[in-house]
Image (cartoon, rainbow, N blue to C red; front, top):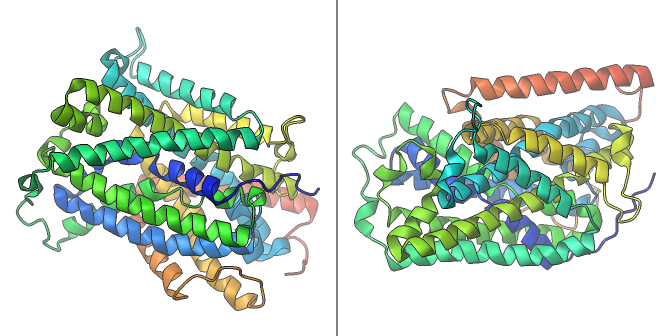
Length: 460
């Protein structure tokens, strides 16, 4: 069945979708978590290392996205890298299977962040529901936001891209306001490092690994355009430019924002426990321009979070559709909306699962998301881009990653450092293992029934 998607996304729309996905609510709620991980302003090292990993990984996405501009992003990459009729069929199925968990986790994190800033505006939202233990109003609000975004995306892409520009303007206004407030009230004395901040002890590297994990989560999203590759105009030029420009701009904004916050709010305050610390930029604005400005900024952060969820759900919904269209996922996901021509079943499935994940703790959501993605997607792509160069050197590549093969090797090293440097990572490994095992069982049962790889000889 041929794809019926139309190429109507230009460079401007691609960059706006990427940056909405990248900025989202992440940096506005995770800065305290990064500071806690390293115990002081030296946590900026986590942001810097995260940016370097993003650049190296982004170059891999740029080459693969330009060479294979199809709906689904990583699904198409893994299928072709490891063999359309061979192991690539299993690898790409496993990717879509894990996406059914990791994509909703990513979407849910944005909804949870939005709800936590709403609790800054209306503190009663932080209370538990009457008669229900450990269930807060913020969780219900987060799930409701997810369902609202789902309803807004239930329309044609041309309408969505117009709305994306409006949402993106709010994103830039939000982060610009934070930087302005910090720069105009900056106190260098706030950046005083604790004793032994840079002693290269095991604790230092464990903290750096935890900080980089969170920073990596905040940078992710520069590849959103690859998931809608089948709808991008002139993809050989647009996709690499969108990926790399998004990383460059967002890295600068993140570093400026974090320095601004740490120059106003003592880092000792950021490590205090409690959900209130997540509204850190609202606290920054309250200290600099007063309560009214803080409330306005909190509303803008909610706008930014909403924009991120909008972009995430839009991009990820195309991946199960591409797999089903290829005959490598559940058939129902290949359906398009009869009027507007978007993958409605895929959109609904991811949106509903994301609403369910909104009832989990934010830090657990982020850790599980990052570990699952690295193990079941990013490692396969870093190795895969090298294998593809070796096996198919003749393949047309409108963009060739710079300094090959250093970027994939450095990105791989960075991801493995994130995974293995943390002493409490076993839980996330278990999550990834369960998802990999269950997906593999599903694939091999189906493959045996269909006489597909590895149960019958196929061309590589």
